[in-house]
Length: 386
Image 1 (cartoon, one colour):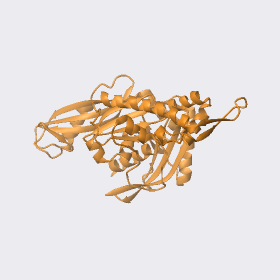
Image 2: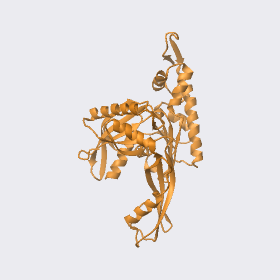
Image 3: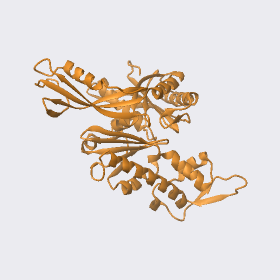
């Protein structure tokens, strides 16, 4: 970020592509800061698998390509970027802290002390703290307090949600970005970043699940009473859909990905049974066709299985049928397939919508999958900075 122009850059390193965005802080500062998107960049990436960097050189190449495109489009050069991080190596827990108040009222120093107590837990080997999110404060058994400063009492407690990541995973991500010529100003949990961009405060208050169906993993994040309540990463995702198409249609991985993007539909009833799709072929295979209904059936079966795993995660977290009044919000690259919302409604028996950035954004219209995770950190940075 360049403070004199109030520029901020975000980077999402996914299993299939790297997304970059550069924005400028505009609007009525400091009362209502907004983001004007100046440039975006996309690049293929095969160096990351389920949130972990497997090939630093390939990841570096992808970062350079995505950020250079964003810089050319924006007409600016950035040095610092905020990077998203996710995957099976991410874990979360709830921690509590208690302190006695030194005065008659809660002072900012008391809040700092109780937060420090809640953070002072063993993170285990090869783990580092990513986020410490106060869920609520308690003053003399009065619960549900968001900001206790100025309240009268003798005892202050905090319930804090601690998110940790594997240190080596974070270090390899930073190393790949640094080798590309940029500095990682901050790491942010991708589901949390996406929540800032696509969820409303009412949804988080009522109870909502954010389901990100990416290329290498599916993230599940549950919010209730305005707080993050559960976090999980499932290993089944868009790459499994692609592999099923490889096996079912006898095409290459690259061709299966293209077929999925151009002709894929996740909900069978939306497809015309008479429609045919030309299949890529080798000389020995000759010209081939397949019904779009078959293509949709393969996708439908795998995505439905993914949603069943997600539904079991809801149950495991204690948010089964009827416990999510605001329903489910879908994000991620695979979530952009036609029919995903219809299939999710059938699988979860709850309201479902596709996630789209809700914050005030001007400039370029950003519709690409993955950008909601980049616009989320912009919103969070704006809130924190001002």
